[in-house]
Amino acid sequence: MNAILNETGLTKTSANHLANIAKEMYEKLEAQLSSLRLQNRDYTLASGGQVFRIENESAKEDLTAVEPALKQIAQLKSLIAYLREGIKAKEEMMKEKAKMDYIDQMIKSGHSELVNPVYPIHVSLEDVVASLSEEEQAHYFTLEARAATFGQYIHPDGVIAKARKEFFKRKKNPAIVAGSGADAEINTFSTTFTAEDVDTAFFSMQKMYRRAQAEFNKLKASIEETASARTREKLEDYQLACKEMKAKRDKVLLEYENKIKKLKIVIPEALKPTVELVNRAASE
Image (cartoon, rainbow, N blue to C red):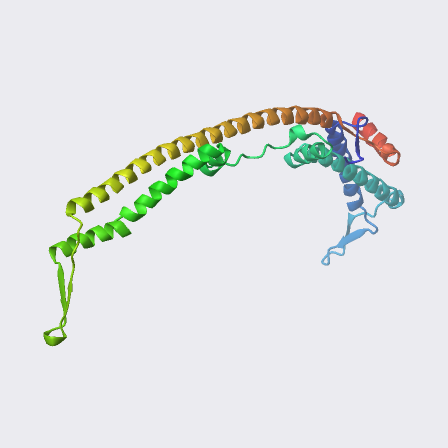
């Protein structure tokens, strides 16, 4: 806190009034100094030779009064500068930055209740899975692996799907001839599998895939909802903590503002004679 401010001294209003009076006083002195003339000025009309006095030199005492006037102007200006600094210091302490600096000082001194709550990280599906028991986690990963494995093989680009497609292709065209004449190569395809064997196995695997995928999707959706619920709960806790923290900060800042409002501008011994001089001028 600026040493200019204390619990005893001038209020901001009084200091501002005093500074304004002091300004009027030194402006008056400056006007007097500006009218100082150290010579007379005569005007002569060339045609008639008549002389006219248009400016008179100042009185001797006006010259001797210059030095005291300059000292007084300097005293008044120094008082104004001091008072303005005090007013500025008090105004700065009421600004938002000063208030936040005060809160930071309070936190550093141990008031942890004024610390901003940390914004919560969203709970992910992986977070919830990690919180399950070992049996539940094993069940989750089993379903995931089963659905992924069956899906991989019966997918149109999967090994089983391709094999089935090749089976029906070769069943329709069981021979391939490459080249011609004596160089011709003939590949023939035969199988003991029936179309029913292949389709039965394929559709059975497809059914198992759909069942595993549906079961996995259901479990995953449940876990995702749990993650969302936990995230909402964290956000609600965060919002409540923010409200509580704000209420505590508001209380601390209200006490701070009341304290600053009571601060006054201390008048040092060196400036007290000038203050008395200005006060007398104000009362007159």
